[in-house]
Image 1 (cartoon, rainbow, N blue to C red):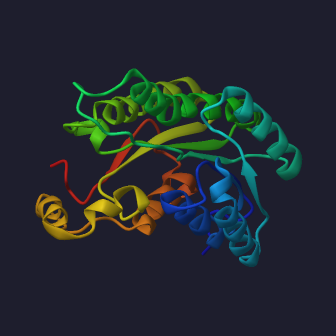
Image 2: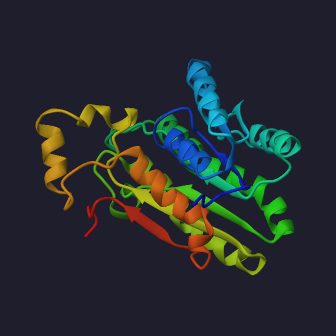
Length: 251
């Protein structure tokens, strides 16, 4: 059963990691996918992903666009709507981390993380809500983090940005519920991606895994499966919620 047959999704920051897994999962379930990547160094990976998606029999296109730039988001969504005609799902996945103890954190480090992680969610959501409200249907999914719920030493900027996403998600859900547009967040724990590659080996990895009831890091597909649920009609009565996909780290 294809849960997203005939639907069209935007996925930001999808050239690798969680975003790539989401794009592939959506395509496997019949969803057309417009996805973004930001840097020239990601162009080859984005092109390869586009071909993988097309091979699954859906419409797909990679767009080089900076989700942390308001004008770029506006231009991207306009171009995407001309190409695809509609947007049913928006996954705000783009994100970075620049970890440092608060005592040593620079204003630039703080601003960069807030801009990419939090401002981008506002920029993209603002662009997609008009067509969704007009269609009286839509699912917006914002990628938060377990760190936004529990905090972590050395990650004040990251925690603040991800906690902000949770508050934003609840507010948008209340604003758009009457138009049948849902907005939810996902709070992953430790996920095996490039961002956490330094944790994969050695005592550090074992220390973190020891604090996770399920005893392992998540795969990108684990997070993609939760995203699929929130994108599909299986979650038609779910909005304003944060699903903690963390292996029990927060209990």
